[in-house]
Image (cartoon, rainbow, N blue to C red; front, side, top):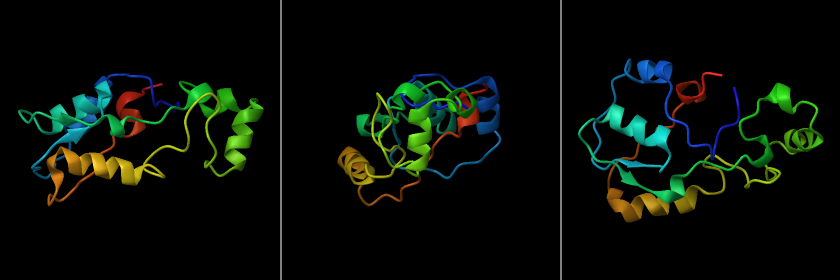
Length: 134
């Protein structure tokens, strides 16, 4: 698997097939990241429901690690330093720790501002193999 965050890749064919194997609960408000793979996921899971784009849900910036895998990074001292930090330090030439760590409050604020107040929230995140067959 490769570190993929800011790279705006579409879903892979195998990822689409995998998504279609699952039944998903109904949703009232569909909010997604502006990334192609996230919009495609939302449209496939909830066809006919227009997603609301929330910029704050954009994936993290892996910086110098973007598009590379751990084998390619194994000789990069910056990668070892990041691993030694437990994954909490910023990425070289990139952003801070990603996922929902640290930015959750901001992201939930965006979700609330887009009309999901009082709705049960289900957070869907495409697994790496959905959009990264390499």
